Image 1 (tube, rainbow, N blue to C red):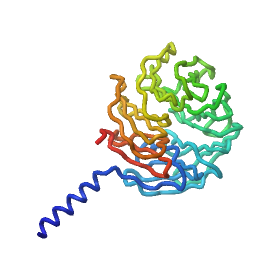
Image 2: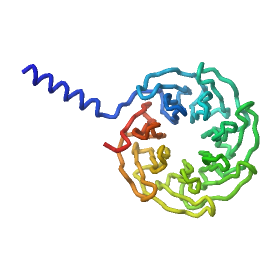
Image 3: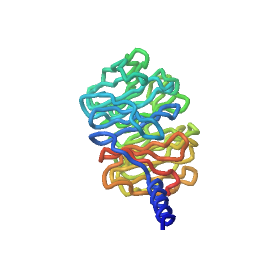
Image 4: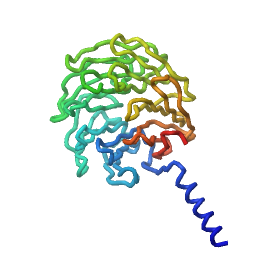
Length: 311
């Protein structure tokens, strides 16, 4: 009887450990997630205005930064891991010292919500997209604006650098993806094909392709050289908000307002698996540094961790 009880207890523990771990991270929706370059720290941005740092993979809180007086929309680590950028409903981007959580710079110039931020691969430049429709470049060392690259005709939702830092992709509520020449600081071309706001963009590992997501519920691939569509995947059950490229560059993960998580095989242009994680929005997704887990941020204030293999 004792042995049977022990066996049942061990079975229950095993089942418990097999469940995707989650924890309540903020007192409002979790809107953005980012891993530090060394993979040891996960940063989260909440609509409670707080930026939090968590050790990985334990998920224990390291630090909570009262970053903004309004919802925080995005966080991004500098390539050296020493700085963290955050942006929010207030039209100010803030840079934070990761070691002590103190603010180092404020970047001022936008006149609307700053929806997205991204560091260049060399860490010298920060790009931003805003509801004021503009896409801008900033000097990460002194916080000064380098140049307003240009505008979308509606809210600009996202920015992403190419791996070599020579190009920037932006996307917005005008259903467009725009490519920018970072060196020459000028527009290259528009990528047209989505039929609803485009909420995410990322350059693939080859540097020749951009992947995008939209509220038309499709994932699209584009040739950088000529701006032509190279493939389309979907539709998904819900409007898409989160997009992330796997560490090995072979898969994409998307998350949406209906709480679904989907993984896509880029080469095959097909869905690998899909899971309904929650009843409410999954606003962001990122891959763990080893590519074995997917981490999502949710409307119900939670961070959820799911095996990337879909079990």
